[in-house]
Image (cartoon, rainbow, N blue to C red; front, top):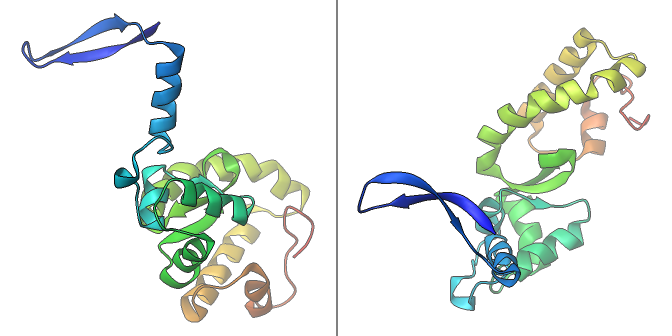
Length: 176
């Protein structure tokens, strides 16, 4: 049994109603919401658009993320995902919802970072303390990273460590 709010246009008000949906119909609606049960004519031809429609695609494994984009689109392959990420920079691989790596639309970072950032900062507080990283050290590190990126542009983690001043600080994995 599905329960939800329904808008009655004739009466211009919202009403709570119960409607019966079969398990098959619920499964179909879930597939459709994930853009997995759409006709080819409704499939998207842009990596950024696919990622934006889903508010991110889990991307711990880059090949799996490329497949997730491909199955929801028309004519896109892994090379298109890499191009969108590296050349166009229309999608970004970063920590997103649930604290896991995701492909996110670059334009969505403007609202996702302020939303998720405080959650991640709070969640990592204990680990930073274990590593001896106090608030001042972290703030200094963020300033250095911003300065390097402002002058050098996008860098990999290894390139960022090379560009930073002095010895690198340990990360959560214990490596620089």
